[in-house]
Length: 267
Image (cartoon, rainbow, N blue to C red; front, side, top):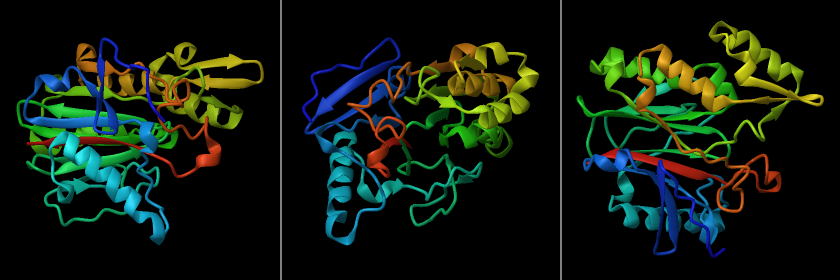
């Protein structure tokens, strides 16, 4: 698919090069020691893990494209097997493998943390003082389990990060406009986050369904541990609304297994 749309806004820039397109946060681009992006599906780019043996080369071709664009080594990619957990692990080397992990943290150079998304919330954390990064996959289950907040706490506890120094970038995800749930899931969110006294913002009833604002919830949780409001940057992009350009489970259910990836690394 040829892309004639520019998704750039005040917080993100849309990059197009060599048959690969991706978004980058303007704030993170200020730090020359960082590598990062959120890939788009234009040019049929897809990073799903479950290719059959005959077509696994497609995944490698796509990794080569993004690695070349970002000027990183393919062997530096660290990608866990994600299962909507609240598990956040520290990465020390490129030989580690991670099962049932949805968040990665490192302070090592040339280790590029990669997680996949198709409506779930990417949370990229950076401590520019201690040079520590975290890449978090927060679906609705991960949000309820507070994985983004747990990652920030792990940076604080393990790397002497001060929360007021953390820069948090919340990537494209399904917005409140399209994250529609039934009463059972609504009740889980209501029970878990009622202490914020913001249910009127977080949950909106439309006809017989409920719409949940997971971006707002993640922002509130990060602020709860001391991340400054002004250091939390949203992409402002809904994956469902832009499903022509990024993989969306809700919008393209017949393409289950298709994924965008978010990359975050130190150089």
